[in-house]
Amino acid sequence: MDYISQINNATDYIQSQIQFKPQVGIILGTGLGALVEKIEVEFHLDYKDIPHFPISTVESHSGRLIFGMLSGKRIVAMQGRFHYYEGYDMRQVTFPVRVMKQLGIETLFVSNAAGGVNLSFQVADLMVIEDHIDLTKENPLTGKNLDEFGGRFPDMSEPYSRKLIDKALEIAKESGIRCHEGVYAGVSGPNLETRAEYRFIRTIGADAVGMSTIPEVIVARHMNLPVFAISAITDLCDPDHLEVAEISKILAAAAKAERGMTTIIQQLIASLD
Ligand code: HPA
Image (cartoon, rainbow, N blue to C red; front, top):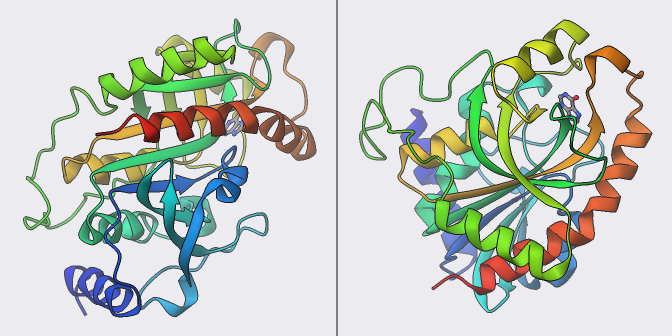
C-alpha cells in the first residue's frame, strides 16, 4: 500500500473510533509528560491499534494518541514519539504528523530535550526554538513529492511561528520562567556528540542540540502548518570542560524543566484563536 493510502487508512480508522476534530496537535516530548494531567481526556487510542502507525520502542515513552480538551481547545496529543535512532525511517517518524493534519489540526506544538551549546544557558532552562539547522542524515521529504500535502520545495523562511515565539517569551517573562530563544541543531543520534562536534555545532550558530523534532517540523511546514517548539536544556555541552553524559542527570533536568514548559504550553494554547 502506498504511503498516502496508509495515511488515509490510519485517519479513517481514527475517525471511525472517535468523532472529534482536533484544532491543535501536540507531540509530548521530553518536558511535557505532566501536560497529560492537564488534558480533559475524552478518548485515547494505542498506537498499536492504529493501522500503519509505528510503535514506540523507547522504554521511557508510552505510545498512544490522546484526544481531549486543553485550555479550552480541542487537542490531539502524541504520548510517545518516534526517533530515527530507533530504526524508523523518516517517513515513519513523521507519519503521525501527516495523520494529525488529516484529522484537522491547525497548529503543531512540539517539545524535546536538548544539550545546551550556548554556554550562557543553565541546566533546566527552557529554549523556545526560533530556527533550526538540520544535521540529521535523512530528510522526510526525500522521494516523490506528496502533492496532496504540499509543494516540492517547501519554504523555510519562518519554520517556527514568530507570533507564537513572541507570545511564549511574554508568558515566560510574566511567570518568572527562565526561557531563552535560540537555534536548535538536530542530529540523528543515538550517541551524544564529540567535543569537536559540539565545537562545530556552536560555531555554525546553534544554541542547543538534540535528536528529534526537525523531521516533524519539516513535514509540518511542508503542509503549511504553523509550528511552535520548545527545548528543555538538560545538559551543558562545553567542549573545553565536557563531563561524561549521564542519562539519569539528563532525565532529572528534564523533570525540573517540566513545570515551566507545561505552563507555557497551556497558556499559549489558551491564547490561540
Ligand atoms: N546532544 C544531543 N541530544 C541531546 C543532548 C546532547 O548533548 N542532550 C540532550 N539531548
